[in-house]
Image 1 (tube, rainbow, N blue to C red):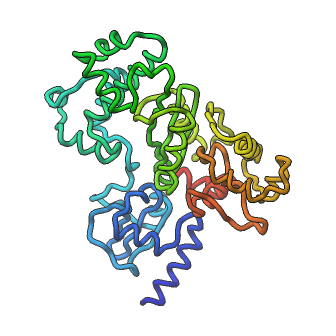
Image 2: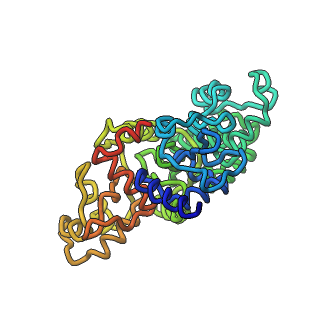
Image 3: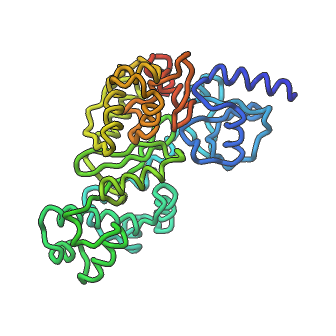
Amino acid sequence: MERNARSEDREGDAMNPSLPDNETLYAALVNKDSNFEGIFVAGIRTTGIFCRPTCTARKPKRANVEFFASARDALLHGYRPCKVCTPMEHKGTAPGWLKPLLAEINEDPLARLKDRDLRQRGLEPSRVRYWFKKHHEMTFQAYLRSLRIGQAFGRIRHGERVTGTAFESGYESLSGFADQFKKTAGFAPSQSPERQLIATTRILTPLGPMLAGATADGICLLEFVDRRMLESQFKRLNRLLNAECVPGFSGHLDRLNDQLAEYFSGKRREFDVSLVLPGTPFQKRVWAGLQTIPYGSTRSYKEQAAAIGLASAVRAVARANGDNRIAIIIPCHRVIGAAGELVGYGGGLWRKRYLLDLESGQKALLAGG
């Protein structure tokens, strides 16, 4: 049986070259690792169903599991969706019962909604808290406070007085507003004209959730949430932009979300969102060079260095690639090894393979699955 399982591993890896190896996937299934949500589904041979990585159903034996990159693939192989974890629903998408509330908040970010207000809308406060805690890592009330502070920051930064902004934002005292503003933003309201806020949100993709950030001028961050360097990238952005990150809304983020959806569905080859790229002149030169690599094409590190007039600085160019904070749009995934091998991608080589396959047309159906 062990020999058969290993054989199936090799066959599964061959069928799904864009996925991590099957042992990694099985470990994610056993550990109910939420970082793999949206990346694979598991078909259980003994029951004929397929599940999310985080399914709470009983752990299957390794020999009884095969992995698929999409629900579509699992369905085509004869599996039916699990009724416990509902894998046909996009994980992280707001459930129907919550969408009216989110639309209300989007329409009025200054809304102050207490538990009694939620109950009047037919919502159980504990259920709302649980969803926000799980998907935004903060309570519903903390999320509302962050939105209010973000709105207040924008008004003060554009010339409105702190006192008027505080009371119009629903605060009963200036001191209470100042304390909450500093706790959320990391600086006093009076410093707003010299500081920035980075509005952040999660964007769901076929490769797992990504964290996006935007200033008033454009997108400054787009990374997979499980990237090890993410916390370091935040610290660098805070320092380089004299900014703090808070959850929020942004037209730049809305545009990015739409364009990423088009990209993964094979309908977009170029992005035209505004970018904010703080860095050294050398880094900016490298990042600009990355954006000249055509969709569906690749370059070696040596070719990339030569293309920007830095043929003798291959290693330095590779380091600058790794410092790129805006994945996919600044396509460092299109740079490969001299022999054509996949090397050096912070999001994981399996994601790099998926993106290259998508751009070459091999994953068009998978991306839409």
